[in-house]
Length: 504
Figure 1: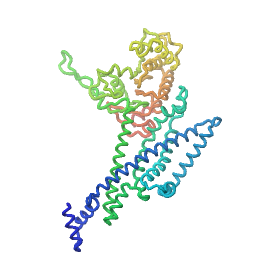
Figure 2: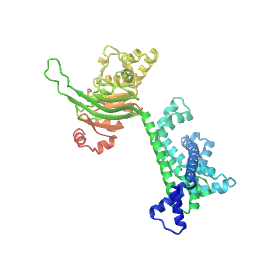
Figure 3: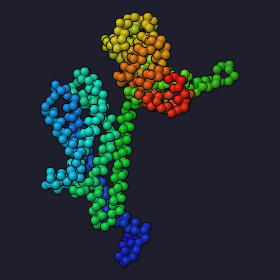
Figure 4: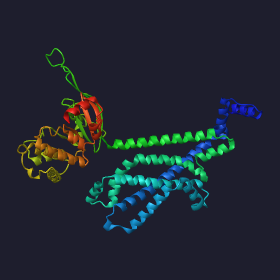
């Protein structure tokens, strides 16, 4: 390669002309290979990443402080406003207004020529300028995320005796981060690209290295294309890392993961029979992810596989194929008992224990499994009976209760195990119409409290109002799934359209 370059150089010196291929090779060699100039690009990349890291850390720190100050100020009661906090809030408002209202280039020049005019470390000056600029935008992103968290979360934390700062750190901020992560990722990508601006003040990052090569070779195409390609690769790597992080966060919230679930009845050849019983495929490869806080409603015609799917989740029905993971643990015979302790079940026909009092129904499983001491179990049972509005029924037997009361007791029994998810198998279908409302209201209250729920139901109003996602099943398959408004307002599957036209 070096010999070829020398030959082309001699040709040019003698007045010869290069064809297109030779010219491209010559310019490429000059820009990247000659005198190991590729090392200059690598050095520029290192500086770019360093500047980005410093600016990123500074931007996140500064932006977080500004956002917390402004949110804390806005959440004050008018009668108990803190004047010191008011001053800090005013400073933060001025900061964000000035930074967002002036060009980045002007900020760089002011930082280098006015504020740090005695410094010769232009790269560090550029990093500080980028960090200060980024902090203003990050603060607004984080502030928006904090304000988007349900105000009831702050009230719930304070009601438990937590102070304001603890509630923010432990409850509010973790929820806000998940909401603003995509916007923050975009801001960080912009920050990575903006490092090229510090070349204007003499910052020795990637573009500075390319400009030095351009000045020595009098050729701009390859250095600039090289810089563009490097920045593109860096952005792609950053985007990939961000997407991986987002998936990791989502994975941590995943409570149920179902893949390729099948269930087939029949096929066995009974003793004395001439042939095996015919097979019936009830489930045909179900793939579903359910996350913490989800309220997933399964709708569809009778016999479509809804209840079978629900019962497969806790192995009351043994799947024929596929896999079910609950909180990362495979739901199989080896783990099913521990899984069921955290996966409550409410049946269509209540299935209360008739020989035990209402309170004993709630205490039985926690006592036998020794989840708590006797006093704590009794206290928890009393709390749950009060929650479902049946505290006065603690010592009666289930048969003396109405259907609606029995179903509320069944829900309380499931809650007594402090489950992470509750499965509801048509909980209102066996009730008289006048009793349906009290059970649905209790389920709505559970949904509002953040309980993860998977519910097989024919109550379309409940599915529309309460669920976070609705799945329509038919013929053992999930035909369509969507958030409730979209699914009911604009169904896409023809079978779903037909089903809704008959039940709505």
